[in-house]
Amino acid sequence: MQTPDLPLFRFDNTYARERGPGFFVPWKPAAVSAPRLLFLNRPLAEELGLDPDALQGEAGAAIFAGTQVPEGAEPLAQAYGGHQFGGFSPQLGDGRALLLGEVIDRHGRRRDIAFKGSGRTPFSRGGDGKAAVGPMLREVLVGEGMHALGIPTTRALAVAATGEQVVRERILPGAVLARVASSHLRVGTFQFFAARGEHDKLRQLADYAIARHDPDLAGAPERYLSLLGRVAQRQAALIAQWMNVGFIHGVMNTDNMTLSGETIDYGPCAFMEAYDPRAVFSSIDAKGRYAYGNQPAVAQWNIARLAEALLPLMVVDEGEEAANEAIEAATEVIRAFPALFQAFLLRGQRDKLGLGDGRAADAEADTALAKDWLALLQTQHVDFTLGWRRLADVAAGDEAPLRALFADPQALDGWLARWRERCASEGGMAAEERAARMRRVNPWIIPRNHRVEEALEAASEHDDLGPFERLLDALRAPYEEKPEHAMYAQPAPAAVTACYQTFCGT
Image 1 (cartoon, one colour):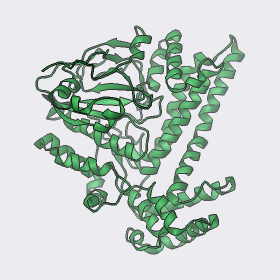
Image 2 (cartoon, helix red, strand yellow; image 1 turned 30 degrees about the vertical axis):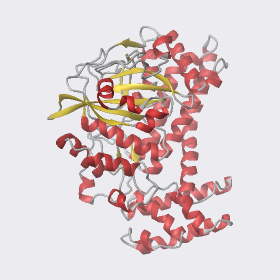
Image 3 (tube, one colour; image 1 turned 90 degrees about the horizontal axis):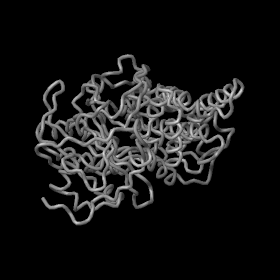
Image 4 (cartoon, one colour; image 1 turned 180 degrees about the vertical axis):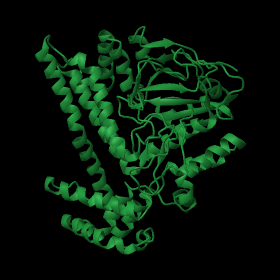
């Protein structure tokens, strides 16, 4: 295989260049026996300024499986700690992942390209550092589905089969994922240095995060408090979007909360079908810590852990008074999180209900309207996604599709009367215009759990990528009701959903 004359990637690796020992360990991905490209995200490759044709076939397979490190890459395993299910681990780190390098995309944004499943690292803690085909293709399906829904997310650039076997509960075909992110800085990255009392490195990390994600804060007197506030805002907006599409992350540990506000790590994640705030699908979440309805509170808890880590940097003067002032300022950011989240949630719910921004005086009434709608969905065991989607049909003048979802259609009557009255209070919007607006924010298709599992089983067990490719095509157009995609819009039978579990893939 010939090496191209020009580099395939134009790397500019600031994390490797500007951060020193202790932040990462330089490390090479493990070479594999028979790399084969299973998936290449051509639109994303073009967005990154790459040549998809040059990455197709054997050349791309060798790169994305980790066998050939491209020119300019400086692969490294990042150090971080974190709280996992409430218990603190002072050192976690990239146990089966590597940051390959950074590129500047066509929009001038700095993006990480990282591997997942590329072999053991110094942070592997006894693990094999590998990944299987199924979980890596899950990252593609759910990540691209979330992207199409307009939710900030890391994205899959490629998946390459390794030709090797991975031993889990059973033997599975191995694969490596190439993941793109605005950065891989996590709450746990800050916890790593704070726990060691390495405040100089903590400051370097915080300044790097500011330069990368909030450059307008650089040099500001209270920049670290402001950084905390920015992260809280991004996470409040993100979790609100999760809640408004019924997404359950499944493992909201602090090492899985990014500074950028992107969703990261699609392991034991799932989408709700029948609405239930207590919904848990993760096999490792026995006590429901990360249940759907708990996600906002967990996000606030994680922000508190970031505040603790940043606190040494917020104390600008010596003495007890300065320390107390810093604690109070950080605490105020944490206290403000629920209201911040609720504001983002209501903004999204108003869009889904076909309402305008509303006046401040309407907030309480609109919140009650949305809560009562969700209560209806819960008591009637209505599919979350289709319930919202069919409400748009009511806006267009057709109640039948929505009523068909309810065991007791008359239960809708009182709420629909209130909703129509609220819509009428705005005036000036035609019925079809309202319906069209609602259909732009209420998806018809989400990554239904049973369809995802069918696609992954076909790829993993039978080397058949057809179901995966067809599902991916549907997920990339979640708001369009195409006849050929109808099967992907239907919920699973209740018996299937009742016993459905997701796994972390490690």
